[in-house]
Image (cartoon, rainbow over all chains, first blue to last red; front, top):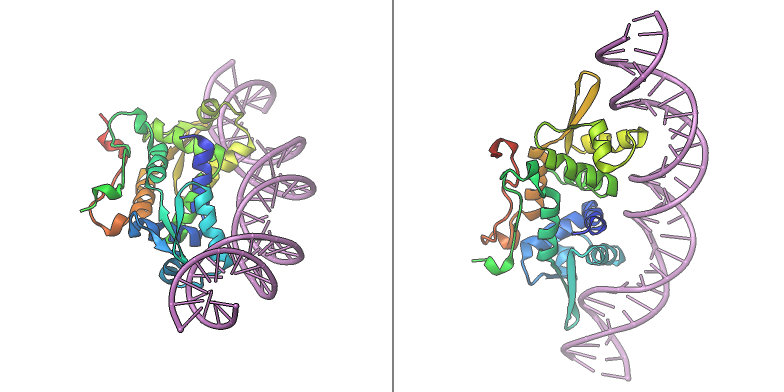
Length: 111
Length: 111
DNA sequence: TCAATATTTTAATTATTATTGAAATATGGA
DNA sequence: TCCATATTTCAATAATAATTAAAATATTGA
């Protein structure tokens, strides 16, 4: 992972609303949630501000969106998330086996 | 972990220089590095700007500093780091066993 | 105590990011 | 086609964070 991608991802997460959105999407799993459901989950309105934050997450590579009928679904990009976590812990303690993150979450492994 | 602590930590990491410092300290392990060694590792000068970034990491809870003779050492706060990673992946996919981060790095486990 | 190395503080300037509110687009059902 | 629901765009303003450079402090050894 490149440093500037990581900075962009971290910057996207460094905001109260976006962090809540991200965690909501992580909990939601691979299918994601529609904008309306996200708004519900956060207790906010589905307005321009929410769209702005969602787009920031997508621009940072942490989420993807797809249209389904009249709804737009946003979902976590788990590959990007795992890359970011690994980047943060890479070669922890000089690589002496502390247990650096390799993969933290993969919807395909869900029960 | 509280949301605003996580936002502060992520904000501290969302900066090219600070992210490099953090990763350098993670690699360095529990003992950390002196300011001069950090500057060396980054290829920058040990000046006011570096101090500023180091203090940001400490203020965000991600690092700690201690004086040793005429040197000041900075080191990763691994507990805070692990809490942050866990916060990001909490209840992944609704808690269905995808492998959420519990602990990613602990210097005491080093070989 | 003097000088050298190590690190920090401060204040002014510049750059980046967030918020607001209103209008616009897009989709599906009556 | 018309209406209601769903989501997005835009532009102006406000708020926050980053950079610079110079002076200040602190510790050790001669």
